[in-house]
Length: 170
Image (cartoon, rainbow, N blue to C red; front, side, top):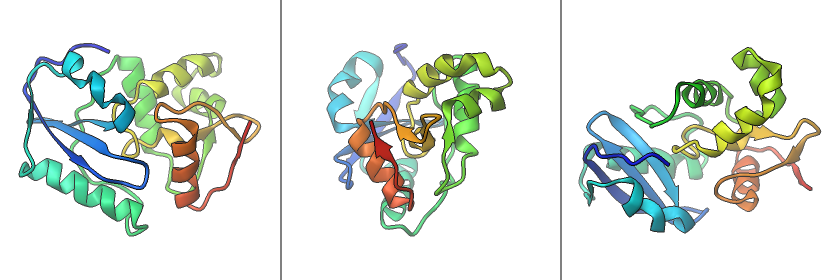
């Protein structure tokens, strides 16, 4: 992952899928990091400081808590993820997948405009820094099975079940 030299703040929150670290800059949310990945933060975010009172971090925590309580189906937060133009394009498609719905990686590639980029789409999804908020968990295998997820397939299954979708893991 590219190093982020822009000053960022973070806070952690407990969730049903483990402790999440929420990171923001002055421009918007940068990342939602799963507990197992938090140890890598120092190497990526060079100017990272804790801030439990930051307005955007508090709002993100509130909206995530509402999502986990099934009281929110979409997020209304300024986002500022780092990525290539292709990654940002794939994440934009992810953001349009409605709550409680899934699409396949090949369908996502089709929506981007190139059905031959299914694997590239999968790789871009795996680099999505804003898990849950940019819902890469809503992308599944063409045959309806769960495939990889940066936080682990168990978390992907939990999020889909939370949204009322039951899928098989192969």
